[in-house]
Image (tube, helix red, strand yellow):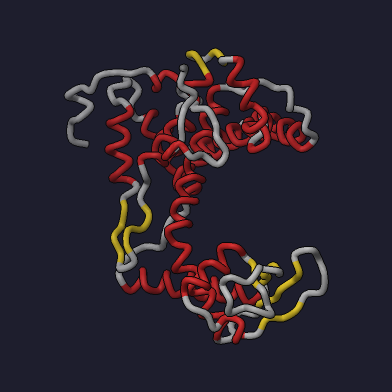
Length: 302
């Protein structure tokens, strides 16, 4: 049976064939596209992908101090309009487009797995601020009806029940201490309270990093884009193509290092993040995707 591709643990949300299973070289495998094109387009339409791609070109030009290309800007406007009007739904999906969505889905999967690991701690924190009244909570019948306020005593529960309640976002206000009671209401929170507490948590976290002499954490998406621009500059500095992907990866580890803090590892560009940045950067430099041996010069001191 032909392999269709896989996700981490073969449990993708949703399942999507890997790029190498959807293309033979640059040629699409039609049955894969017939099966998965709607998934790709619902997440990132062809014209929306073109907007991304062209916007990266503009950013790279600006970063390099070059004059912005008016033609590229016009193409961005045209593609953005097509995406908004959904005029691109019959456009083909390119290998670069498929690969970008694939990598983002892998990142989403990784974030979901991380969220699952953090959920017990997050649930405990939310229960604690609901118990002391810093987070106002409400309940509404699942079938619809009047919203009622929950009081702090509704949150006087043990950690296991708190995790179950937060995971399901539901409660039975009349039997809130019974784990066997049917959960009749959806739980809602006061957005202003939640925003305030999250802001306070972020500020406390950044103060702890500052006290430890560490820079603030880097957002993954922004770091990937930054690495893609950095790779473009590295390509320009290597006109003879003496370096291959592994060489650039080693340099990227130095340019985007992982930092250890009292809360664990912060920042750093993961291997998956580098591969995503590599795919972005090589869209305009396809010659860099060709395999090549390492050379002594490529590994010489910089």
